[in-house]
Image 1 (cartoon, rainbow, N blue to C red):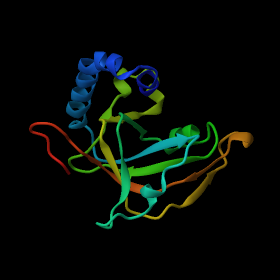
Image 2 (tube, rainbow, N blue to C red):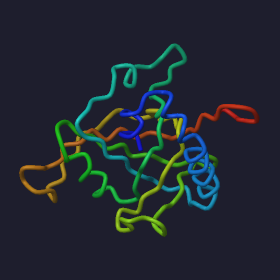
Image 3 (cartoon, one colour):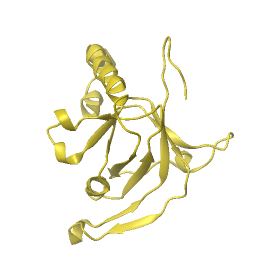
Length: 165
């Protein structure tokens, strides 16, 4: 979905408003059925900005993802995504009582990935220092040396009736 948004100008992007709202609504409703467990997010080919790692004036580290956030219950799946291209890292995320992802296994094309989806404007707060973990299970040329910061997810709602966490 993010790739499609990049190729469209702003006048064309508004055509997807109802679709994005419907997917977001479904994600929020399905998330209420999810057990709060650890999930993992693998990212490759890019680095996070310095602002993510540095505490702001309130002593908080992290950032907000503007798009839907895909995570998995399986750390090895996240590590495989982190090992795809260039620098990679995996977030270890503890879901909370309020902010949980929607389990998508039952409708996914890739049910073995145990995917959980979070709505747009999800905030990832860094609560531990990163650790280096190397997984030897990956093919030799694609071994993932991933920074694994532990964090918590917080959803920032916007609009009428929204609540900030």
